[in-house]
Image (tube, rainbow, N blue to C red; front, side, top):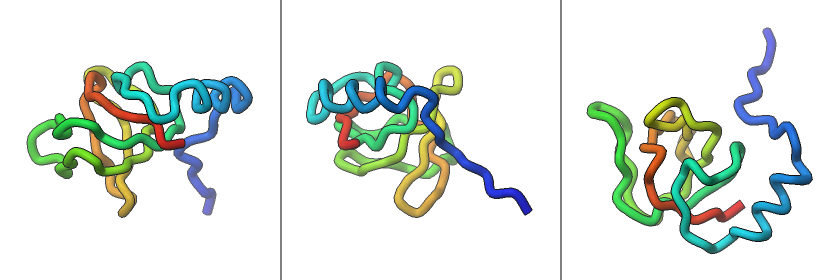
Length: 91
């Protein structure tokens, strides 16, 4: 059985430079590099029936998928956070 890797950065050096520049600064989720842990800075905007997220929760952002994103919470549950949500990079 193959193991699925959800997030494998293509250019790790560039992503690490962005992490250093923007760590601790608020930005929109669509501005964040893929494969980054972020803290939600406002009440999470998710579609109906999705796992709810509240401000200050830390999630793993994988990639943007249209209006929403593919993120996972600490329990590994998918949280489709809106791409325009205000977040802060934690790593």
